[in-house]
Length: 224
Image 1 (tube, one colour):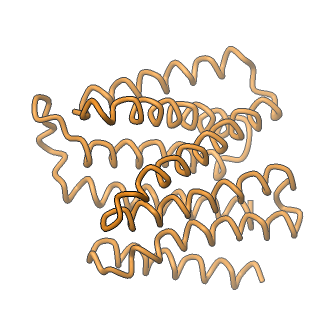
Image 2 (image 1 turned 120 degrees about the vertical axis):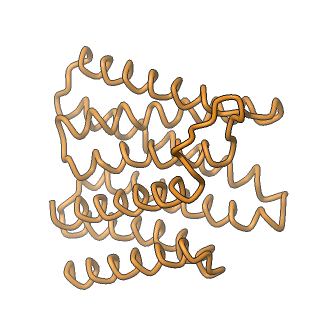
């Protein structure tokens, strides 16, 4: 069963990646579907006792919520009323996952001092990203809250990579960078252009980080 799920997951990842690059409308469904499937894979990891039940159930629930957020974001292009709901779901799931990472790292024995050092790194990275964004005043608070969420996620991911399972930790680290690039793509700052970071390169980097992180999480749930 694990082999079948792994093959199916990899096939879905490749197909979804291709649909995103080619901008095929089906991507609006398959990409959130892959996130939801990732949550189900984590639940299977709980069933085969490869993932602790409390950690697995929490992660799976947050991933399913994130999948709903991704789907609503895609639909909000034609229905603006879905945007705040999608944003809320995304932030809730992000905070759940970020806090879960931190609790897991503490449970695995990371010292408060090392965790604080990772938070310092994450805050500096978050400030660095924000400096290159130009956000409308109406969205500034939402973006800042989102930035806090990804800072918590990055610190927890780095901590988990150090003291826990590296595949599990990679998800948090790569999603931070993927989400940061999404922000740079959505809110570019014309006063601080990054010449080498073209829209095409940003898209490829976002997709590479996103799908690599999902595969890493699958490996953690089924094999690591």
